[in-house]
Image (cartoon, rainbow, N blue to C red; front, top):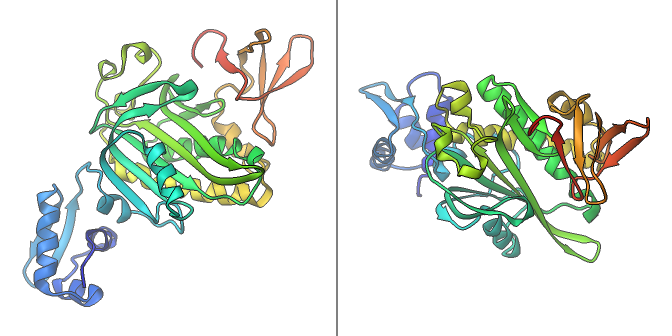
Length: 332
């Protein structure tokens, strides 16, 4: 029987004390030599594991590495990320997730990459995503609801990322409607949702998430976004584990998605989303191809549209696919 590194990592991480070699042998049905080999592999990858005679092994510190073993060892989800692919380099995790969907992989399959060479954003913008500092991940879903509900999943993910960042870092993350996650008025996360539809049936949805985590300075960002982008490390001064943040995002998303599908709208998540909404009760500029206007953002409705109170007293429900919303005096 072959032992999975993620199983040993999970056991060591969850244990408050030493884990004996015999316990590992018994639990996974392998020899002491097999356990010893895995421990040495983990040490070579940067894990600090203390080995004490007659006591066993204890995990002292985990490096900021992204690997399938590191992420899987942390997950406590039921379906989100339970089928997990890790790639050192890829064009786009969204494209990979679509391929896995076509190949029959299950709902919740997640793709994580260290580096992307053809990442995409809103309106089809392409960029190269360097390794070692950010999170590039996509979760694939196979929902049983109509295609017109899928756009709300972008807001569900934005809420999940904002919650995860706040829990993990203590930073006051917010959401610039509909799905930019922001810290100190600068963007730390972008989200891209795509779906494959046949007639009135969703074959699959992929939600791509890019989070600036350990970027050390604004110079690491492309020139055109330096004024509006930041990272969690820049804002907190602390380097953090990307695998730990992936774990939190997937756990929050699984919970919020399961809430969403009970009503197929955002009525049970509106209050939580509004707590993070930076535009709430603020003056905004709605950039509409039919004619731009200003107003006061009054939150979202149950389908995720932004309610903007206009100067004439009327309220417009703004749909994200048609327009952009900016703060009156800047990005937020």
